[in-house]
Image (cartoon, rainbow, N blue to C red):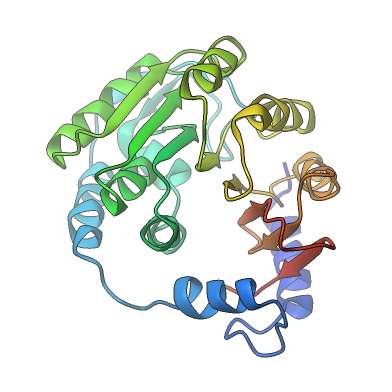
Length: 265
């Protein structure tokens, strides 16, 4: 993974080359609508307060969990014992991006959602709260972390979430097959090139023209940047949006030629 200094340099490069975050100069109607109606939607939805209050509690939760890190590791700690508050501080997606996922679900109404990497369940909660009629399957490798996530879903009274526990290498293929159709998937798993491409290939049979894939931390390391570039070039991918900390992939057939956007957010 990149050092904080190197990541800062990469962010500066992104910021300087990215398109205006207000939609000016974007000629794709779909992307212009995404920027104006989703990216810049500043409404404060009802669920935000409840989920962010839970985040505050987790940031002060001193319970110590014994966990198995099956991904590329934490930027902060390497031991197999971590407090809930440390996990919350280093691993949870900031509200800005979690709330963007909420707005995407609110706008595009995916009925079947999958998340690779539950952590403490904050992002999962945003996905589920945005469409309580939808089904959300979230996958987590560490049993102790999954248990805390289940507690959080109960506190938020979200009953449209199913937690699949286990190593993605052993559980993902079966999960995708059982789902049959995936409308939106948030991928926050092993931040390495080969596993990320493997996840993509395993997800592909359940994807369709209007599916949305969101990859976390696409500039986290050189390997993740390589994975992102490889995914962009896949034949079935027609449109991507790089927001630096996340990358969004679309398969819309209305895009006859590939379009790749880098947008400030």
